[in-house]
Length: 184
Image 1: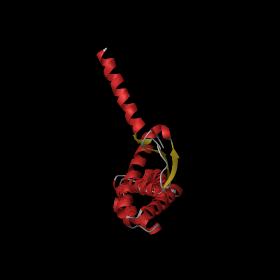
Image 2 (image 1 turned 90 degrees about the vertical axis):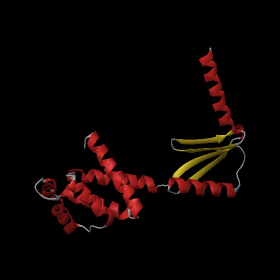
Image 3 (image 1 turned 90 degrees about the horizontal axis):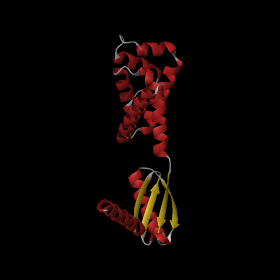
Image 4 (image 1 turned 30 degrees about the vertical axis):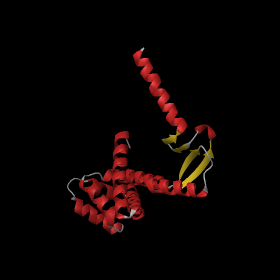
C-alpha cells in the first residue's frame, strides 16, 4: 500500500473508531472490519466483485452479509467504504483500526514529578483526572524532585504539562532574555 493509500486507510479507520466509541461498539466494529478485511484479502473472486464498478454498493454489502454478521458501526463503515468504491482498502482499514484500538486501550505510562512527596490521596486524584482526560487506564510513576521548588510536572509521551515554580521561573527568564535581545 502506497503512503497516500496508507494515510487514507488510517484516516478512515480513525473516523470509524471515533464513531464506534460514540456507539459503544469498538470491539464489535474491530471484529467486523478484521473479518471483512480477511475475507476480501483471501478471496480473489469476491474482491473482484467488490471492486467492480457496475455492482452496486447494496449488492456488495449483501454479499459480505452472507459471509459475516453485519450490524452496528461495522456495517455502517463497510457500507461507506463500498459506496465510495474503496473495497480494495478494507485490509488496510482493518489493520489501521486494530492499531488505533490497541493504542487507545493500552495503559498509558505517565511520569509525575513533584516538588514534595505526594500523599496517596493526591496520587489517586491525579490518576483519576488523567484517566478521565486520556480515556484509558494510567500507570503513574511519581518522582520527588525538590529542585522544582513547588507544583507538578506531568509527562505523558510527547505531552508535557509543567505547573512547577521552576518551570514558571524558566519561562519568565526566557521572556526577559528575548525582550533584552530585541532591545539591544
